[in-house]
Length: 513
Image 1: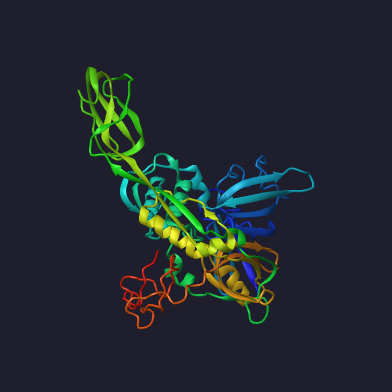
Image 2: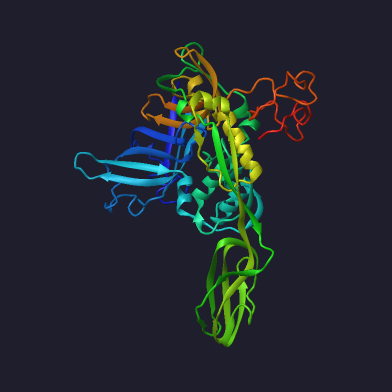
């Protein structure tokens, strides 16, 4: 089976990938192997997502990639953050495997080496360099909060694939905060197995904690990987971890509940004197330690004093943790005693959500789940605790395997699988046949006629609970048959889904966490 590859760098930054030198692979400049990795930083649904990365080496005999060589056709264009795309074609199917930009460009100046090491990252890495400020939202779903962050940093609307989200955030806003960490906090508030990642089509993808229940790729096995027998077969290296260290049976989540003050108060004051020439404007950032809403435009005589001249005042927004006060002077103007009044939204109480699974504690000892669900409201914190205990109070093995794309069945899996895909893994050595979720993907593309290798890092899918109590069911609705559980495990085939032909009915659709 023939596999061909694509690797292009838009050296001039126009993203057409069609100019001289952009198709680096066709020039024969790329030396094996090219590597691509994306997904979580460990093969666990609890682990954070890392930015996608790519790395490869270029032959520099021509010195085209030497930045000091003015005779190079790329002279003046060997800059960082050049758009980059990589892909593969297996049979009649083409796959995009990476979209991003160059990150590092290291020329080896040794006389006999003549090589350049190039690394790249996808756009998730750029979010660490962007700060976001948003309005204050009294109630917002996690998906809408992700949209608000992307709006704040100017991310295109057409490059988004965002779930609505299950968690509701109360009195949420950002004030000049790192976009990436803010999105990671929202994912934590959404709860496992939520994720945010960058798709190969360049879209930011947010999946909420229910996505594995609702999406066919996650609730139905997409392939069976075996060590012997029918294709697709996997190869060494193979790693298996029993999952003892990642058991959690005690959950304690602190929920800060905020209430808006009924009284208008000064949320920011200044003792400075502002001198503004006639016809000029002056902008001041008014920041508060607590979020506020209903800010009123400062009133002369109450919120500032005019010592000379006259001024008009406006606000950039009326809610958040900071606003910009703009003063426009008519005549040479001097003002002082400036303040901003609004309604503060302070933490009024902190409620501790505490749950534990006694059967797991007796078996493994007490193992506490880290409290990362900051921002979740009380009911969502309880749902997250239920999910953690349902999924994590017993061990979930991880399994890492390598697929060599030397035939059609394997190549289709190498390039066609993605994060959160459900697959069945059969291991004769372990006596195991079990469903897993893909949490990590890593490609090694030899580029020289040999076969691609893809490593999948997977975590076992939790087994559904037996005989859950179901109202109006002839059997499971009876005491002694249908069982109540302290932390019921949601299953894709029985959760309640509005407008669904069968799962919107009592006796079939069960409410989910």
